[in-house]
Image (tube, rainbow, N blue to C red; front, side, top):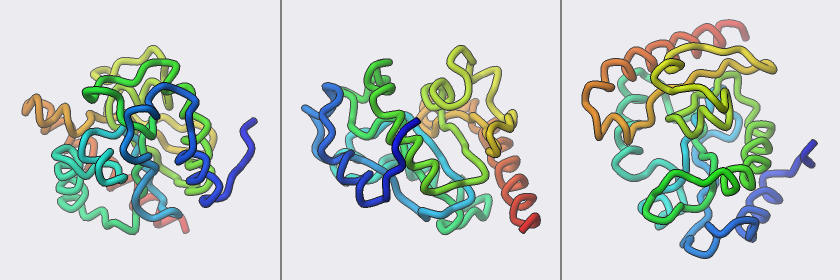
Length: 190
């Protein structure tokens, strides 16, 4: 069991982290953005170039597409929090190595406990692997809800995949409709 940290302690630990080699190339540690008590949490893979420069997740081209999807589905900024599996940019935006992701998972678990969302959406295969199913395939699992430990979990395509492959946009649109529906259901239960 990981020791629960306050936001300040978590941020401090992340900023000083040297658990894996990713810290050597970082400009900024990228912890998260959004409402720290949101009912909806998005988890991505890791920071890219723009995220590393600005110290915020999903601010590059993929982030702009994510913002458009959220806006189109009327999911306001106060409803979500966004973070990543790894907090430092992998070289050349490669997929985080197993040991890099594993070293950051306690930080992510702490973020989940602090935010305490009802819904967690994994953006892409890497997030799905470490949060939902180590052996799962995003193409088979995307758009499906899994209830676990009091959370509603759903994997969907990473926005960067939508930029590379237009054919995935319609499927992602359907997933975001499901996310909006689940958010409405949960809001009505309070």
